[in-house]
Image (cartoon, rainbow, N blue to C red; front, side, top):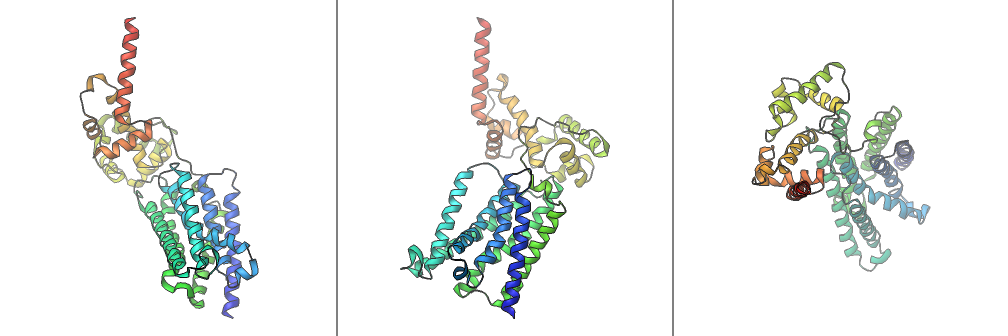
Length: 366
């Protein structure tokens, strides 16, 4: 009876997870966020299929495909967290290649302990390799949770702020529990009663995702694209109370140079302006076009830093001095932010500006 209930749970979860994944993948505006999300949600279905009793006897070689998909899911969850909450577009090919290597090694260990595959003659070594792969999967999942938690206060997008909590709950509980079961139960697997409870949770998760998607609840999140190259405080709307607050933010930041305060956060700026934090978030996001408070600050600080680095009268000032006076606590974060914005280091930017000024001066003399 329990076995039949488990099979019914698996079938229902597979159907719902694949439905949700298809809904995400078929969106008209495709982004890397949607691609990673579709793969991760389909990974729930892959796990239910690959871990089913007699899967290899029933599916044959197709079982290897589902197993590989299941093993790749923690890495894709990490890529999803990076796309939503962390840095985007850097070393993507390297990350995908590393993920492929992790899947290959984990599969070799998984089958080798049953005396199958290239490690068939070394089952103990295969088991150790499998445990190493599971440990790496757990590290990726916990790293994904850390990315979701990090800078939560600085996130200006309300839907994404709520998604961070849901992401941590789902990944930290469901995915991490599945990846860590090998350490608790070993090759014998978890008791069927415990599996039944876990699979019921996965069914509820798949149903919840399908319901939210059907209502369009994740539309903005899945279409998330980074805002690049936005000019300094380009006001995108001009109506309502929040727009008035956005104009006041712009004026106060420019006149009082609040951005020079080291460690200034959304709560500190709200206190400076005498307003509620949630209203300030909404005003900066909806009317000034920023998705992250740190990006908002960087626009002010980097614009000032670039102007001072290009100023011939300030060529005697060390880069560190300019960084500190622009609100950065140390040279490292300043260098990284500056290079990400302008494509060169502050020193290279200053040299290029000096070269252009010399060239213009020589041209004028002619």
